[in-house]
Length: 300
Image (cartoon, rainbow, N blue to C red):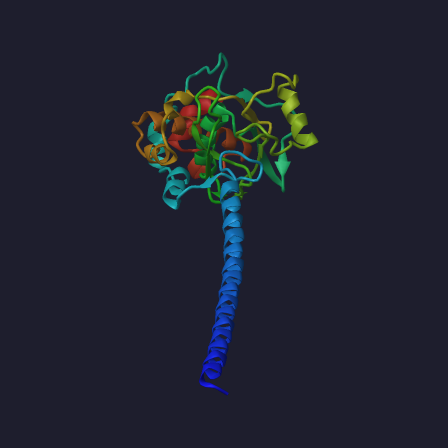
């Protein structure tokens, strides 16, 4: 074979080797692109899932049927459930008027005593959107804490933003628990903040409500029957005192007997305490014989 032929064959082999190497490099690039593309596709799917979950958000604390509100800090809860007896005694009637909405704060009850679990029963029917319920839950919590323990941590909500006294900071008794050796507390929050159904009163509870407010079209919130000894319909102090205040601001004001909030909320709490004392045959004596209860007895 001549020199020219050998050079030609060598060039052909080198060309083939170069083509094969180029093909191998192209195959490696394709595999890398496929792998990278698959990884990117997985990342895109995961990211999309995360964004969907974030857009759905968590359940609203302002009143969906699955919500129990916002858990209040322990410091705030303790200020509500631990108002000093001396503070309540100093407040007495507070700024609770002798007549609210043209009638006394409480009306005498009718019929057989309400009981639950062998104890006199305090039945509350309200709604989370209701501004008047928002005002009255504060003194109810203060008063109930003198006879027992709210066993479920307090949760905060705001009343409807489109009603009078809009967005009043308050508590909710939905899914709350209460233990007392003296009485049973039965709360029914019928409606959420956005006015969807939450809890339905039983037929027996509706019968009690109808006894005092026969027309279902004009029944109002809140309604509280103190074992049929006393009945409270509506609010007994001006809710405007709570306007613009946070849960912590309201709770902190309760310990100052000269503050407008304490004079309203604690004054109402003393009336509620007096009504509960009628249920419990004035037990415990240290509460029912206190100066706070003595001050409101003539209004019951």
